[in-house]
Image (cartoon, rainbow, N blue to C red; front, side):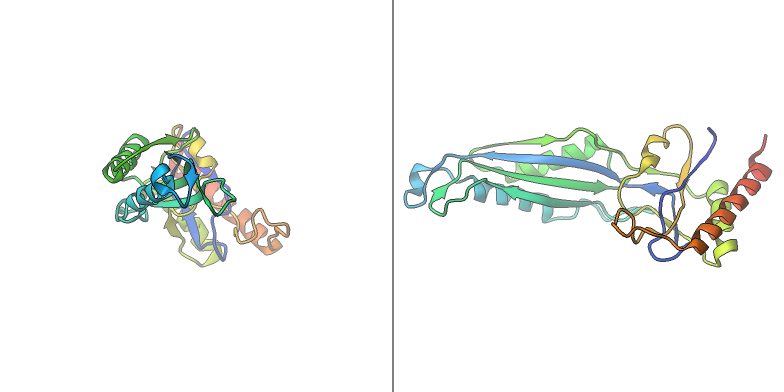
Length: 227
């Protein structure tokens, strides 16, 4: 393949709002802090892992990972779960666990992001033990740089919709991550306000306009890029 147009629902509000020229990467991890169970009335006989976990999470979230780049917003780390599995009010738990996800831009590779997370955790560690595990299935960021191909796609969108689309890299991962290593890829499709909802729907007029946009893209592509 020389180029690819992926039909993801890229538009937040109206057809023509945005064309995706890249995506952020995604990395998930689990922090597991080890303590010693005991009675809350005798804390000197126990080792509470919760304050240590909170200190580690503060180290991850207190400072931004970066300030963004020319085509990407800042990377963001979100803590999505904190668990101790302790239903009792008078027991210090033996273990504490937190899960996090990072959506990262082109300032990081997977290896450099893992190294930064590991560095921040090590800097906050004082006593006791902990471990961090990075989950499999992570994806890297990618960018199809603005140029003739992106311009051709944007011009076809603008001609049909009357809107100049934003060149966006926001949102989550997509199937473009499986194509990016084969050829330059951009994404443009329907409005995504109801995607995956029980009442997912789209106006027929948007389908008709999208068909015209794709027809223009194809005709102009082969006129411009045919060998």
